[in-house]
Image 1 (cartoon, rainbow, N blue to C red):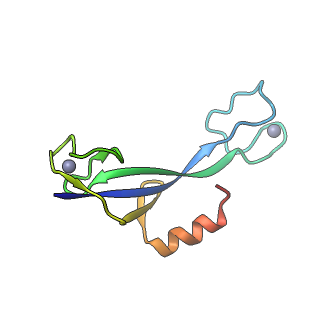
Image 2: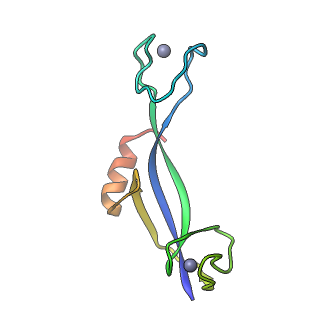
Length: 98
Ligand SMILES: [Zn+2]
Ligand SMILES: [Zn+2]
């Protein structure tokens, strides 16, 4: 039996913007009006505690290592793929508009 661990990952996303004739690509600011195009969002995923492979919230067995998955309240927090502690995550989450 392995736990299904929830991950909350803060990731940058590009928001759509009013000038639809320009290509946004990896620009951080709009070249026409200078507004920031970068926005942060929280992506939620689940991993198997035993093998750390992604699983679905509804999976009963891990499709990678075949461990039976049990539910847990544990949530691991990441920013851009780096693990951070829960307190820091809450601070950052309060700072950004989700
Ligand atoms: Zn603009
Ligand atoms: Zn697994």
